[in-house]
Length: 471
Image (cartoon, rainbow, N blue to C red):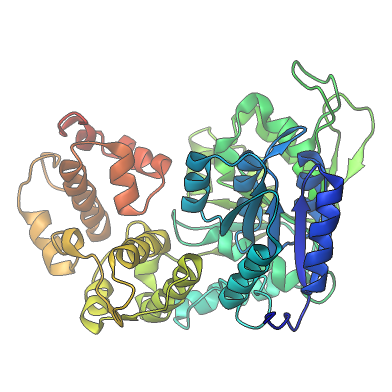
């Protein structure tokens, strides 16, 4: 029996250079309620995901200008809610395993078995329920005063679709989610298909930053074999999110300043001036005034970015929201892995309420994901993996004890660190010891990015030097 069709349309992307196969697949998806965009190469696909939000994507692997394997991470970065499947005539087991680990829903082979494909769609329906997924499945959670204040300013900022917004907060607090939420609130009624694009500034090489942001013409630099669409062009009329904006090299900050002041830009190698009419949202986990004082950030750029500033509070400042936040994150993870949602133990939640969370919401999500993957699917209750966390000084009393007791790796003389800093210091020290000094493994356990942990080690260099060498 054919499963009932979805009750509302869902947006589909088909990327395949075989026009006949793509048309056949588009017909199948249309019959099932899909609104389909077909692309025959990656250049077209990149332009499509820059302009539209997709809930389902079917990718071929071998394409004229690259592979679906390379494209899948780009797709998920821009549309994390999108369900991805790959349909290829040249299957590779190792590739299939890696893609599945990274969230790919299914890996099918050509010639396509129609019944197998429809069964795959039925499983996707079960993940979605009876309707297509919300474009903002993850939401800002919190009724505490700290989160209520942040949400209030976000709501106010959403009334002005072109005003620059600066999001400030520690690593892992959810600044990217706040940016996506601001985008949705701004355009949900006026232009729900307005594009949202994010640029992780420290991940872009300095010599490629201008081309990444503004685009380039063919031949503009060595290796530029075709025209490149910049993020400013792709985000036209929507939101351009610049994450970790303080990591932009000083010599490139002037180019960003001119762009923000005039909303004009030129792709590299072009004489044509283009205009940007969307919104720029920037985020930083640093204190801008300190960056300016140290000479690492332009003062005029700071004022240009800080038109409307919103502080996203660290999790330790709104632990009253912990239970609701944990339930939401767990529900998302269960959807990701196709699992029934278990219950959390009250004692485990009570333990978390006394924890400092140096990695903030990202650390909480990592903890829940690790616990879920280690928990049997048939269990109704899911214990959290708190073995290493319970050994950390997670309460203020333990922090006081740690501050008054000399320990290996601590600086000599009276401590000038606050209680939260001392707690974070001790947690990093202990985790580094347990991981044999391995920076990346320590960062993962703490829920920090590699760069965030390196910055803490620059602040407290004795932590690095006191650890045994990595194994």
